[in-house]
Image (cartoon, rainbow, N blue to C red; front, side, top):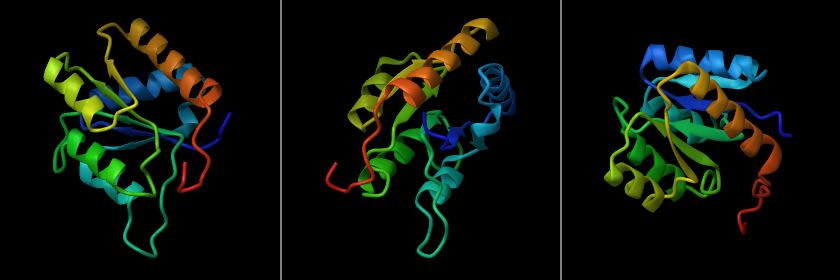
Length: 145
């Protein structure tokens, strides 16, 4: 299992708090980093030259974000060699077929609709974390991957 952080991109404080609680319940609360808009996400993942770059184990990305929308963030992540293979999971309240289709078309690794109840959400976080941190074999840090 990797010790890399998990990046949550979520603009709604209540949803961010709920996610923090679910990660804490799964024993991963100290690994979760939260940014509240697409611009901050891109600044962390694709910083200007000479600035440190965040290398998370995976990104949980909301679609409806201020400044830079989630799908635009996803496109920029996939367009850059440094982040092209970074696992990105869309985590949203949307159930729109167009959002699901566009998420996969732009390179999302997974699309997860946020469950309504906290118990279901906590279980979703546990399963996602177990898969992406313990089961999935990430791409090695080789540009040819």
